[in-house]
Image (cartoon, rainbow, N blue to C red):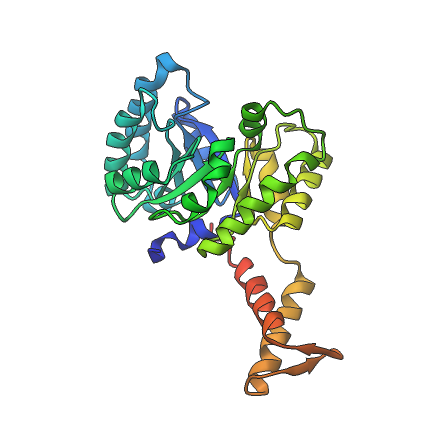
Amino acid sequence: MNSGFDSLALARTFLFVPATRPERYAKALASGADAVIIDLEDAVAAQDKNGARNQLASAFELLGAPERARTVVRLNANGTPWIDDDLKLVADLVRQGLRAVMLPKADSAHALRSVAQALGANCALLPLVESLAGLDAVDALAAAPQVLRLAFGHLDFQADIGMACGADEVELVPVRLAIIFAARRAGLAISIDGVTVATRDAAQLQEDVARSQRFGFGAKMCIHPAQVALVNAAFSPSAAELDWAQRVLAAVEAAGGGVVSLDGRMVDGPVVRLAQHTLARNHQGFI
């Protein structure tokens, strides 16, 4: 994958902003979110789609290069009346420095390949698994060209199935595992979990992020700037974790590789990889 995608591969927070609210773009980018998703899909009514594209085109020109690289555009779904015009706009934005698009209702690797071809090699794809069809195709989606990370649209998935999950969403355990496993098999960057709709409930957000971490997600979509700091902190290693990781790698280097002992515990290959992953997470705060 293009090295220019590194920051999006490590991003912990993806904050949504409607394409129809260009005055919020810069504020969202300054919120502390690692990435901002400008939404042409659910946040925009059908009669406003053309206007939203025009507003996005005008406002994107005003963003600096670093902000453009942290911006993602969520397109309308494949097969909708708006996708062709979305792709025309986004192809131009990619030439101006846009690095990624999010693809809702992703359920076809063929459709992903068509988008990749239309937008060129400088644009990463973030497919949203939001349906049973998407779950069935998750390995093919993960293996499609230019896919950087998978994302889970758990609310749309529930609607597609007709589920009514409890607060702990235990009913979605198999789906979250399938997404994590597919991303791992394809060698993708760590996956992105869905939103928490209770924007004023910090306890619920904390529980949701903790669940995401347990499953192996490394990022979360956010719908309000107030959610960003908590999510960023939760997906960042603590000082103690960083100290441990640094000592692990230092011990291995001093021993010239192989198995060593640290704090009375064996340090072998899997432990070294965990330490390396911990230090990599520390570089997610790239703003």
